[in-house]
Length: 81
Image: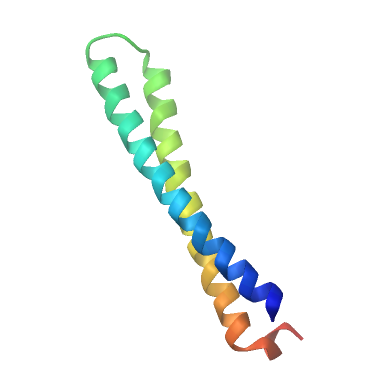
């Protein structure tokens, strides 16, 4: 039980960090779009910024799924057997 509880706390802390990473990736993508429009970066660099945002968003979704699963196991520990 204690392990599940500690995992829940860790996942909650990670969620905040992951959401900040998404915001950073959005800002980086906006900057990359502006730079691409004026010819300062290549299309590959723009695509890399897009991919970074998608990856950050996927990390948030993965963390949410893990959080929900851990909550379920915490509330119903007999499911782990």
